[in-house]
Length: 317
View 1: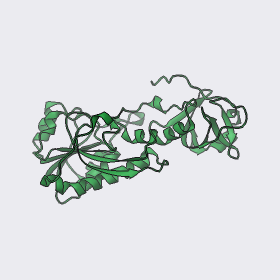
View 2: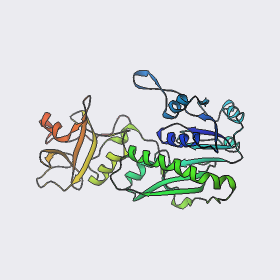
View 3: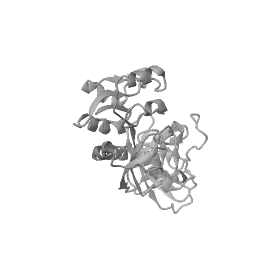
View 4: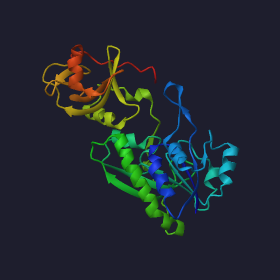
């Protein structure tokens, strides 16, 4: 079965790996994003491009899938099946019609919940009790296609986005492999999504990572886990940015401490007064420094204790 895979990010790598190792599949090409400018202007390849190059697979790297030359290049491959995961571009209707077995998409949420670009952080931010992977038949909308199969998993409330992405990527690869025979044989009737239950997500911005102490400690703790590795969660105090990598909720401080102030808690640890209590900052990273415990930062910079974090609008917004 001549198959073209479209994908870019880390979530896509286990899925394309499973396709490449599947005896039912002839992976004729990978479509992925072009190189982007990285740190210090050095070009960087996305994970799928690195994977494909290491295996010597043909690659197409269009700036736009809508360009006639991009569509012609894929059409010339004569695909029987298209599989997409974590690609990063809207797929035009002309492409969806090229393969006789359709275009399948693997999305890391239980659609119609958390459509769009950032479903994994969204599930953590919302405090969802469960999440999963959806295999759908793509249409021209944004994650609106008919559902072929879903796999569900419970959330513990301790996952970071990077950990959850790894787990869901492996499950997506398994779901595709286990469903493929039934799909090709026509034994699965895909089901429409319930649009009334749909929720949407958007691409994250750097400014999303700013910690607002006027929110609840539970909200901020989920943010810290949801925004790893990017955009990260950070606070600023006296113009100095501190990234928070790990935190946990505690009760409100007994003394009269204002919302937004840093104080000592948990045996000399560093804590932030929130709207409804406190948040111990277990692992932090000052600008230009290494990751360290909050207690270590407080010992090295005792002037932080009693100071209030800045909460103006971020210039990146």
